[in-house]
Amino acid sequence: MHKSQNSSEEVSSRPRLSRRRLFFGAGAAALFAAVGGTLFRYFVSTSPMKVESFMTHGTGKKKHILILTGSSRVGGNSDLLAEAFAKGALDSGHTVDIFSTGKMRMSACLHCEGCWSTGTPCVLQDNFEKLWPLLEKAELLVFCSPLYWYNFSGHIKSAMDRLYPYSKKEKLRDLPIKEAMLLMCGESLFPRSFAGPAEAYRQMLGLKGWQDRGRLFVTGVHEQNAIKGHKALVTAEEMGRNV
Image (cartoon, rainbow, N blue to C red; front, side, top):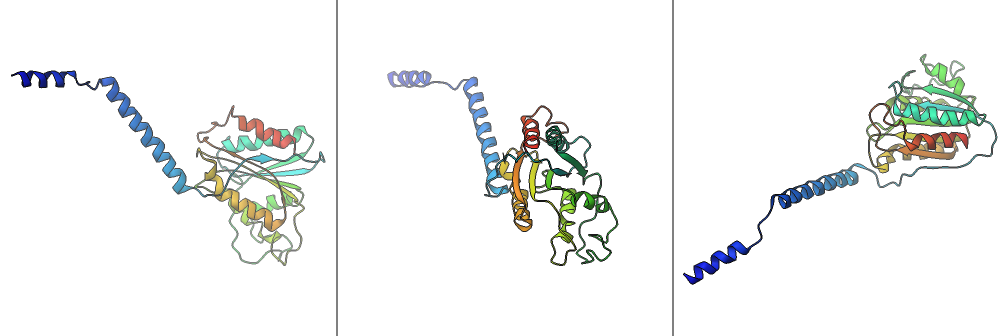
């Protein structure tokens, strides 16, 4: 009897788990699971290439700037980014053209090797006929695209492919472009998600011998107008002003 009483006292003296502790434990476990899942997606779905934003200051010389945008969504986040850059550049006295590849769509390059056969860069008759005259007077080319599946949008990629006539050995003439910049935005929270287009851009610079004047990667914007009020718009305008 004495032993039974002691056992009962020992059981009753053990600390009981309160509902608050249970809820706290469940919340902590859910948080750790969410963080773990995010980190897993981060490491398995992105490149190890380092992606960072930067800009360099120009000489103050006025130049002709062409901005290629890559979204077909009216008032999309990348469009607002391009408009902010253009405002800064115009305020500094530069000449700016904006060409929307998402609204002025064109075929991708067919690799037909018909370049210059008609005296113009390409034999295809589409909106590239409106783009190439702008390319041939631009000194600075700015690519501004949303992030689609860890890459450029298909719209702006088609325009990039159509630059082939200016890169082949048998070209009639080359572009006056000497400098380039890259502006991108996307839903991903991780800059490394932009590694694919960042590397493609780097390779383009090497091929054409263009000077890299700056890059801007904006994370965490997806819904239309989500970038409004974002500090990235101030940065883009500053990049345009100092180009």
